[in-house]
Length: 109
Image (tube, rainbow, N blue to C red):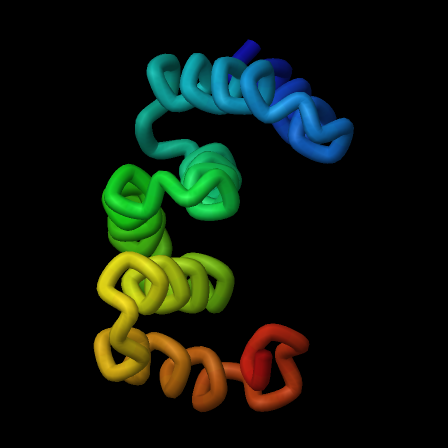
């Protein structure tokens, strides 16, 4: 059942129905706070909606669930960068992504 909420949230996000996507992903996380992909998608969506403080919280949790995740580290760095308007706070996370996978398409964005 948890994955049904996750995938519905992803579909709603792709359809740009952000309000419904947030609701579905949030429901998924209420049912399973350790659902890495729901946490990552929720954090990314919050960042896209410029809710940076909330996004940082969820990216941080995603990094706790999977410290080696390139998308979680990249998203965390990017969100910190936007939140503080200071690229230096994101540097270590961007460098992590480049070191982990130099060919990753987001490593040099």
